[in-house]
Image (cartoon, rainbow, N blue to C red):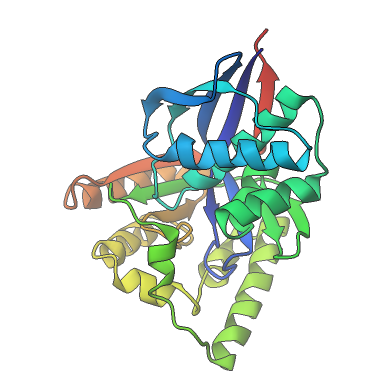
Amino acid sequence: MRLSVTAPATTANLGAGFDVFGAALALDNRFTVETGRGGFSLSGGGDISGLGQNLFLAGLEAAAARLGHRAPSVAVMAEAAVPLRSGLGSSASAICAGILAAQALIGRDLPDDEVLRIASVLDGHPDNVAACLHGGVTIATEDGLVRRMPAPDLQAIIFYPGTEQGTEAARRNLAPQIDRKDAVFNIGRASLLVYALTTGEYSLLSSSCEDRLHEPLRLAALPFAKEAREAALSAGALAMPISGSGPSLIALARPEDEPAVSAALEGVARRYPPARVLSLSFAERGARVEPLD
């Protein structure tokens, strides 16, 4: 049996929605899965180091166990377009792909909330995995409640510095306690973000993406951040939060402003090799599996 599993890149937080908001991006990791061989193997192109053995397999095994089966023996060919540890959800894409592959190979589906629970445990929190599974923009809580909004008619221009940063390493920079005023600030901004995305009043994004819980400390550790943000906003970007835990930044822009924002960020990237710029749309579809024979 052969399957194709596609799982999109994601961006999490969108500024004020720390560990809650996520959005799917039009950049996919693809996995061709074939049964009938002993054990598990992974090969392929793109950035797959550590991707399959630790994460695709983890999703495959966890979902199979929940269905009362041993993990199927599979050979996986990966085409990994999402940079590893970039803040673009590469871990979530591999985990979700493994879960979907297990369901398809065993022939039974888990409830949606159980799939989210398994993926959240493996990834550490629900924001990226919810967006990867459902597409669009998602709001996900720690107890498994998910609500989805349509993908916005915006461009996501990613400033990717070409370096890796794991989520746990980024979290070690965060303050163990927060001030009540900062918590209230973020609640207001996150609420405003939902309003902006659901009504299309995108002019509110400059305010609604502001954050006081995680971005100030994370931005201080990124030497290119101030210059990249100033360039993007001057060129017409509406906001430029950190993508997930970083190190990538994501400029949100109207489609007509994308060329100018991309050009401005390309200029910054040339001063910070091996940085590069990715211009992506938001993705309406989440992870999916299709039979190949």
